Image 1 (cartoon, helix red, strand yellow):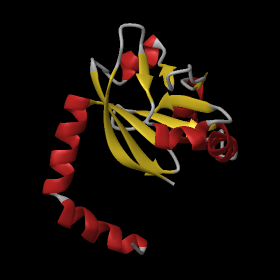
Image 2 (cartoon, helix red, strand yellow):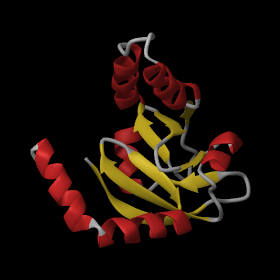
Image 3 (cartoon, helix red, strand yellow):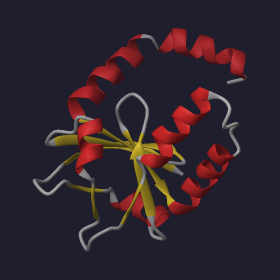
Image 4 (spheres, helix red, strand yellow):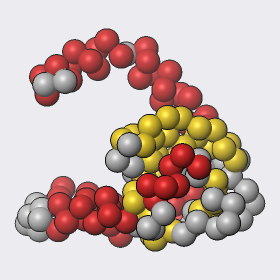
Length: 143
């Protein structure tokens, strides 16, 4: 289970340290891709295979299904950990998510999100301000 929020720095080579508590779940390999809300998603290879399988089952005849599959799959890249627990984020993904020097790595159960710290703080403040409305809307989903 990947949970928690951690502040890290992006170095000048595009590397970011992944918290040690998450590395065990990612030791067999990881995949980073474009996420939603302009963050990056980091999955274990096993979890990404499950997600990719679901995308491959979407109907090719639906434009939105094709677009979302392209968003998640075409932008994906395998990443490896160096001896210091860092991964290198490719330039096109750093650009997509507007990553600067300070980043947040957030655990969301089956994947991690990597955010620019300023964007994360803004998103989190808005979500916390609207948490009652969000919770009420999720009631319809059985949560």
